Image 1 (cartoon, rainbow, N blue to C red):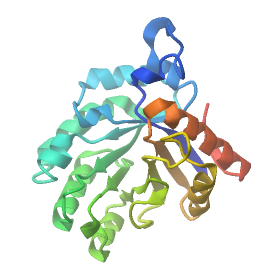
Image 2: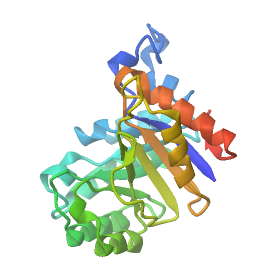
Image 3: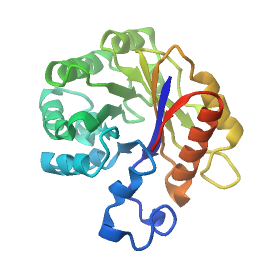
Length: 250
């Protein structure tokens, strides 16, 4: 069962001099990052969607087996709240498909005050299926408890979308539904003595929840402060290998 482990974002100032050499020859942060991790979750796209040429350049800077997950624009998820999604989805896909085979899943992180609307979610997923590549993977991270219903689960299953398994302070932030044949785990903040790192036993607990029922897992650490995400991603990958998992890592 392959587990592909990385961090949420890679362009952090406080990683310079720790994870990134100072100065970095050529200034190629992504090139350096991709020599250590086989995936990254691009969260800068939430704030501003780059041109297709930028995604094409990122593809050229990374190895052939590298995968970039892309967080959908806040225009789609937070401003329009999935309402009339066709135009926003088309614009997003027109840009990210320039990654070619380096394109990983698309992440839809919903606002914490956005109450459940299964019809809007379904309409949005329909657009991704209509306009995107056949093998496009979509992960959905609701953050309001009203989404935890059978109807929402069925929508995710019907459109082969993954419910994001999210962690905050070393506890699941929602139900652990298995809605498709791959998984997406986001770890936002640990409760270890070196904040915001995770304790090793908590990482073991997440590995215990990952089983052979789902053959592929994307795992991203979003606790970027003090280079904690890099540290925890390395520890998680090592623990996974020790337990016999196949870990995609350079």
